[in-house]
Image (cartoon, rainbow, N blue to C red; front, side):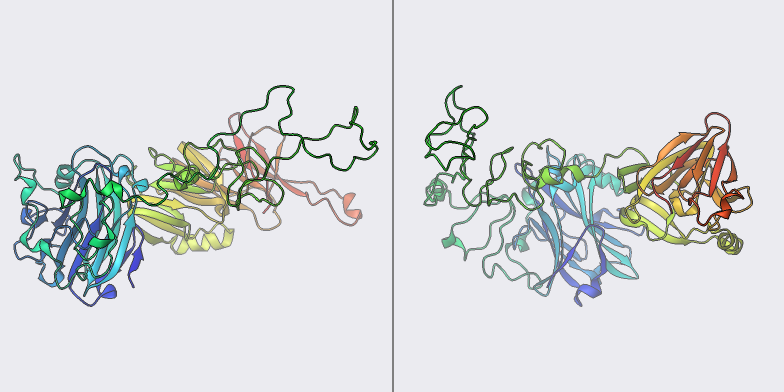
Length: 557
């Protein structure tokens, strides 16, 4: 059974198959689009140091034929033969790409995939759709790479520019004149080789966008992707093969019925029911005894009532949809244009880029490591997903740091995130807030810190006072230029510091480092004579010049 990969998944080839003679099939298509599917043989620096290992329509194989382009077959838009044990030592990566030839974008493509077949059996498949991309005109689909052994990685990364831009990105040169594309189909592309899938055994799935074939033509091999049907005489006869019901089935009326004229009952007269309480039988109801209009007829089975109309008795709205809410519409939002899965997922799409730290929602934060050129220190286990080439390593505090952290309760278990990619951070659904420091400072308890830029200086700071129950005598102070991500329980409130500002020590989250903090006890000797207390015996008092602030959460630790 083939393993289904997601973007970013990696595996050793030896864990997928014991063979080294592999068939690689790529499927990608879009309405009115033409694609160039290629393979780049790169060196240890991920550069095309030898142009002979750029395998594309004008150069269908490498010198020793360890990489061969076979053409469209077995339902794939393009296919390759890769013999791993024949690849020279100077090639460390095989990058399979697709680029739009002409106008178009990757957001216009339909469902596509890259798959690996060994011994006639599919061992791995990575699928993608156009909704994952936007204005990119090229796509790096998947890679074979050498890291002690050959491995496979599902990349799925869009690239601005076409085939020429990809070639320049890998260090190649674009020739001024290229050979005509009529020579792109090699001689051996007429049939699948022995290591590939069996040649059209039963009814293979057609490639995306290819014209449907009649059932009588099933034994014939599938046509190449985007190629017109071979027999020209069958084209005018194709529209005659219509199903019995040629007209589309209409589940319900396209528009609601027009309203009745003023003064005219909206429904035909109905038989009088039993008289309401206090009404004389046979007499029309007077003031205060209006007969409610009859309920509209229930919608047919399986059909939802019109938008804004309550379901009739016995008819329930779809699961997860409130009465009167359009399908795929988020609560409290206007109905989205169009319908279907794309409209339902629109409110949850990734937030626009452009900044190093970008909140995706109240509980999810994304950091782009390629911006700023510095590492990020985050709480261990806070990564929920990442894209690109990102390395995670343990960040120790040292022997002295561990002693101070254990003694003060301000120890942070951190990991160091480096590389070029995007990391998404979250923890237990807490609300996240990005606080950017520009030479100033902020005090935050270690428990409320999720991540911060490595450029920030941080140290443990002692709070002046005689003691606080629970040991909250210390806090973390961050200074410098960078961003610190603070997590809270619920939506916090920010208040300016005045001489009469007090906060519960269990609810305070952060405050400006220039503020003076002292411990204020509300315990009185005469109150101790009575059993019990209010539970608010110890607070923190803040003092400072104008411009200082405190952050308090609606939750007590």
